[in-house]
Image (cartoon, rainbow, N blue to C red; front, side, top):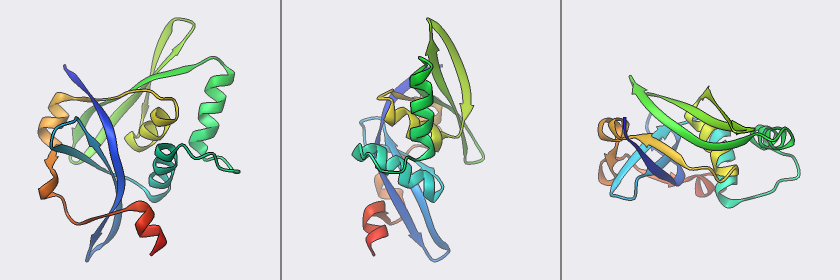
Length: 150
């Protein structure tokens, strides 16, 4: 299996007649984007991490990072390795005293944590090949901050 380093292009809201759905877009640096539909609270947390905001009341993801740090645990990466029926599967890779552990997580939580820990996000090439899209084929998107301000 071959994994590709991806970055977060942004957090958006898909506007459709059926309703609004938050989405985080990952990119491998090409024109291909990987849309992952997420919950609203995770979208706000990811956007906060992207902006490196320090809020007076921490998000749950901030509490996890603080706990990991206090116990000497480091997030080394997030691995998004499978997509099945539109559901993505991911693992956080943790390091402690030269030992590695992998923890299954939702990609949205993993992205929020990886951003806070400055850890890379890897996506399996097969996932990118099967679920990646050209930006032109995505539905209309509004940046999350713009959507919140409306």
